[in-house]
Each structure stands twice: as C-alpha cells, then as structure tokens.
Length: 480
Ligand code: ADP
Image (tube, rainbow, N blue to C red; front, top):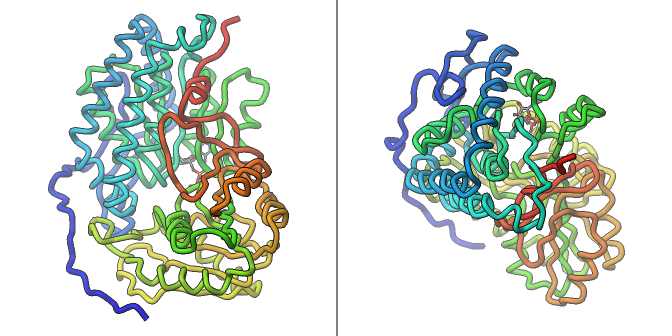
C-alpha cells in the first residue's frame, strides 16, 4: 500500500479576474443589452456561487448579431489576407498576455483543474490562433486556385467542456478564411468567451467580424434556423447534432458536426504496463472525463487483466479531487448539476446490470458538483455503461483475447471519434489502427492535440474536420 502524502493547499488567486455583474451580447464591436431583456446566471460548479449574469439571446438578439455579421463579412472581404493574418496574430498575442486571467476564469466558470486550463487549454488556444493566422494569406497558394471562397456568415455553437478551446478551434479558421462569425457558447460556461470578445475589441478587429450571443439551446436553435447564416459549425451531443442536420437538409448551407464518442483504449499484453496505466488514467480522468474523445472503454487483454487493474486502482487512488483552483488538483468539479445527475444515473445502471464498481476513497467538498473517479470491471459490451457516452470520470473495462476480438469490440459502437492503442509492437499498432473506425487514433499516448492535426469523427460522431488544412476546408466552398 502506498503511503498517503499530505499536501498543503496551493490555490491560484482569483484576484486577476474581474467580473461584471451583468454582461450584454457582443454585437457590431461592442457589448449591447439583450433585446430579450432577460439574463441568466453563470455559477461556479465547484462552489455554486453566482459569478455573473449573462444575456439570454432571443430571436431578435440573434437577428441583430446576424445582421452585424453580414456587414462584418463585407468589411472583412475588403481586408487583404495578409492583413487578416495580422489581426489573428494580434489576438493570439493578447490571449498569451492574458492567459493567466483566462485560465483562472475558465476554471472558475467550468470547474476544470487550473493545471489543465493553464497548461493545456490556454497554450492550445493561442497556438490555434497563431497556426491559422499563418494560413490566412496562403490559401490560394495551398490549393493552387482562387476558386475557393468563404461561406460568408458562420454560426458556431460550442459546448461547455473546453469553452475557450472550442471557441479557438472554430473562430480561428473561420476568420482566417474570411468568414464572419456569430458564436454561441454553452449556457454553463459563457464567461471566457465574453473575455475573448474584449480581446477582439482590443485587437481592433473590424466591427461585426466576430459577434457573440449568449443563451441556451433555444438561442442555438435560432442560429441554426436563421435564413441569413451560410454555415453552421456545431460541437455537442449527438441528439442535437442530428436535429441540426435535419433542419439544414436541403438548404444548401454548410455544416460540420463534432458529436459524441465512446473511445476504446486498447491495451495489449506486450504494452509497457506502467506507461499504459498512466495513459489510461489521462485518457479518462482528464477534464473529469468531460471529453468527447475520452478513452472511456478500456479494452484489456485478458492475460494482463489482474495486474493491470491492480496498478490502475492504485494509481487512481492517488488522484486528488477538489478545488479546481488548487494547483495540486487532478480532478475538478462536474460542470453542472444536470451532468452530475446524468453520470449518477448511468453509474447506477452499471451496478444494476451487474458490473463491479471501484471508486477511490476521497472526501468530496460539501458544495458544488463532484463525482469520485470510478472504474467498472466485469462489464458486458451490451451494458449501457459500455455503449452510452457518460461524459464523466467513469471507466468501463472489457477484456479480449485476440487483436481481432479487440477490434471487433472497439468498432461495435455507433460512435467513431477516437481510439488508443498500447503495444510495443509497431506492426500490431499499425494493423489495429488500420482496422479501427475512428477519426483520431493515438498510439502509446492519449489526448494529444495540435492545431495542425485534423480532428473529427465517423458514424454518429459527426463529419467534417477541425484543425490543419482539412479544418480550413470546412470554412471554404467552391465558387460556382
Ligand atoms: P450537452 O448535452 O453536452 O450539454 P448539447 O448538445 O445540449 O450538449 O449542447 C451543446 C451546445 O449546443 C450548447 O451551446 C447548447 O446551448 C447548444 N444547443 C442545445 N440544444 C440546441 C439546439 N436544439 N439547437 C442548437 N443548439 C443547441
């Protein structure tokens, strides 16, 4: 048994963040009060305290933002590509300068550990703006044609798990390719997007090029249904994605969907066990498991099951759950009460179906939304916990005997976003990767991202790619 170390708190100060009591939408270059006259609360999921109130985007607000974006598109078209590039570089630099402020705010509003928002999210956010800034004036050269044109006004709807990073994945390529944007962040995590709007103003981005409307699914639906939007980019649940796809069918508008996942993380008996344990932990417990590409199904070769599970449980026991602003914290708060209820219900179904549950011994804070790191063994592929996306710190384990069986189980899902393979044998890794239906496959690592690398899914995980050259094409159409 490993000794339990005691830690002293190392809490990041919140003083760097200054919040308004109320925020308007960001339209035509400034913050405006909502025409809906309605506001809603943004709370901290780790303390349940009110952080601020943000505007609810009704139909008239969306309409206003789209008109502004239409004008913004005309202005942006007149800006030379090399100049567009400079605006994006400026935004990237300003994000870097204020990255501590952004990171603290992201952890306060969304519940993720500061070490992740500071060391993963924020560096990736500015890297995306730098990367796409570099592309803005090279589009013609890259495709050898000037026949590709921006869609026009892009409506972008993003989720709450990586609020600022999903913004960057969408806004940077859209602006680099000459589109204007109407963005809607998720209702539980709007605050870093509002700070980003300030950055756009500070960078001198022409009015109307970037517009932000806050609100919930209803606001999102107004964006999807708006006649004057040319392209929708959505990241979120598969159910909503399907709805959006059917709304847009036959309209001729552009659409990219990045939806759910239920990734297999396959560990072969020849893998380096300790390295794989670390990777499996990172694969599922990173960001509380609120990750569409999370390695939520551990597929373990039967011959090493006992040794692996023992080491995994011991490693899980070391995970520190608690205050997201504490630099020692590995697992922060669940993003919302609603998400906590969903995780709890699915875990109960796993127990009722006959799975064996292991949860770490840890004290959870009194206020806020929390869930202990959880591992299921003795799971049958038909159980709901093996099929449905839990989007929480819950790992289900299924065993296999041969590579063929591993691939069959891994592909036996309606999703196809990501997968992981752990093996010392290159040929086995390549054979497995060739046979997996997944958009992103990691080998002997997991959850690695880079702006130059395309990300996206197959099957019910969506279509279209974000990142890299492919990501640019999601915002360009052929001129007729
Ligand atoms: P989750 O279940 O993970 O919260 P959702 O798909 O509900 O995922 O939410 C992702 C984003 O989609 C959020 O910004 C949310 O407000 C928005 N949204 C929810 N419902 C709709 C809808 N019917 N049309 C457009 N956007 C929606």
